[in-house]
Amino acid sequence: MSTPPSKSSSPTLIPPPVPASGLSTALDRIGFTRVQAAVVLLLMAGLFFDSLEQNSTGAMGPLIKESLGIGNAQLTLINTVTVVGGLVGRLIGGYIADRWGRRTALSLNLLVYTLGGLISAAALSYEMLLASRFIVGIGLGGEFTVGLAILAELVATRHRGSLLATLNISSGGIGNIASFGFFLLVLGPMGSALGGDDSSWRWTYVILAVPAVLVVFFRRYLPESPRFLLSKGRVEEANRSLTRLASGSISGLRDPGPTRQFVTERDVLPTTKTSYLEVFKGQNLRRTTAIGAASWMSFGAQVTLLLLMPILLVSRGYSLTDSLLFTMIMNIGSLFGACAACYLAGRAPRRKTVMIAAVLGCVSAIAFATLAQTVVLILVLGAIFQFFTMMLNTMLSVWSPELFPTSIRAMGASVVNGIGNVAGAVMPFAALFFFDLAGVAGVFLMIAGMYALLVIAARFGPETFDQSLEAVTETAITANQ
Image: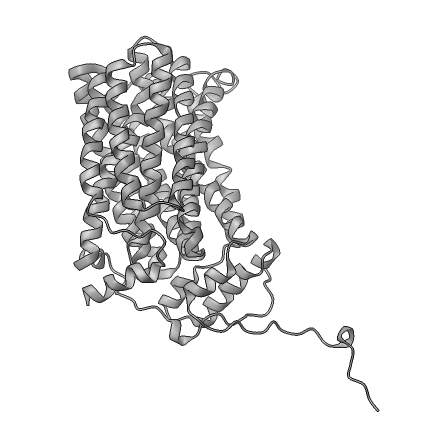
């Protein structure tokens, strides 16, 4: 009598297919694995460089002014050109991401950024520096919004809010603190070794550009968004991407093994045309208007302070080194604000959190304007203000990719955040007007007014907390058809 073969002698079996029960259910079942942790780290690395570049003009402003013989208005224009480039980059990156894929857009972003950074280092004139910062802006522009889109689509609903907020811990939290510490080191103790005041800012741009190439190299292993693939009807590729996510190991990014069936043709997502016009139709328009207005107020306030804070402190008689040190210390509040948003994004409604943070941000801005007269008060009240600034920006960044259907998610998030980019280009000029009118207090009172308007705008945003992306956005597609 023959006996059945032992288990050890049987051939390797292909994992049984997972019953197709919808994309959201599949991601919920997969949970949070090492693969998704690696994705988060790769996105955070790119956003870290984004933060350093955003702060570079303000930190190196006095040296650039002296080296190129320009004034405050021309320095502010450098920031404006970078921000405008960021707007262009967001729009281009969002379209590429929704048309050809999230991975393609993310790789192109950092390559363009590196090129612009190297041209900045070699700038022979003010005009050449302006052009190079526009290129840098294009490269950085789509980095954040495309990163938000792909991460929102790769994780389970229960993890989505906290993980999206984690990206801002890298850029706005750790990035803001590390950037001013980095500039303090490079422009201070290392300044003479880099050629003194006339050359150290150029080498700083080189130092910022080169490591980004390494991030591009490792990003080639990123899995494509299964939601994007389903929106294009590419079911087999979506299953391959989900198999990578479910592998549970970093090696699974390169070789996840046999493809498992998570989704079928029944799970192909309803779509709209891949067009920016769709962002401004029906329910999408209402969402764009509400959260876009909130982004104007929040991002405009943040960029204004990051750009002008060293200059504002120098105007009060502090040295450049002191002003950079003070700004770095104040940005510890940014780190805690991003961490608080990370905690709340997984536990509290978006709308209520944003409105409460805006009210408290308004109060803290008024407190800084009226009370920050000593070093201790400048540092403490500045850190409190930065706490609410970063908490607001982080919560809005979590909110924005949840508002739009998969077929226009990157474009919708790009528009909403791009409105904030425009504010970052415009509001520093308004801040200079209030600075000339009423000094540092005038700048902070202007920001307090912006936060008051933010409360009103957020009131009209839809609540997306603890809902799957399909539950939130498919109604928008139906409403627009």
